[in-house]
Image (cartoon, rainbow, N blue to C red; front, side, top):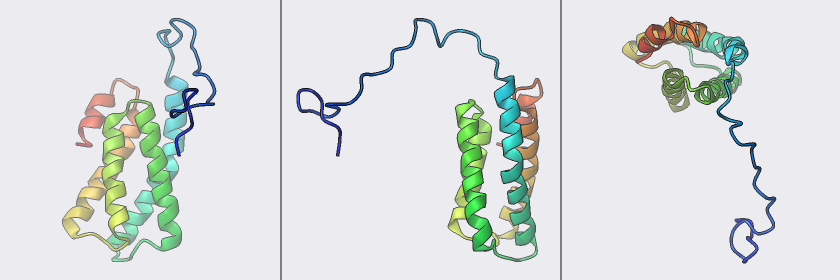
Amino acid sequence: MAPKMPDGGPGAGAPPPIRLREGALSEPFDLSELLGDFRDEARDPIARLDAALAGWERGEEVPEPDRAPLLRGLHTLKGNAGMLGLRPIQDFVHSVESVLKRSAAPPPPPTLQALFRGATALRRAVDRAGTPEQEPAFAALV
């Protein structure tokens, strides 16, 4: 149910909107620390993805206790990439999530090989995000 507006419409009784100081969002902002945090936080979901791919290569399903944290980690990686404007990483991780959500069973060999290549490209793109080597690394994700 939507909050009520003073006239009885949606939003009534809601707190007033936050007002930012004029020009607050146009000031230069150094993303280097955020990109470093992004890289650090990306290591775990990428390692989980590598483990899942290795299991699939052996013909194993992704065990259910491993699948939920893998999907959660990839979802967070996708969101963090989106917030930083790293759209190629965001889009690639979304496609990997889609494969993992469909089934815990190994995908067909061509899909699995594409995922292995993609995981390598993802690792490179994450490592190079925000550097002069970013664009070539992102191009490998497409």
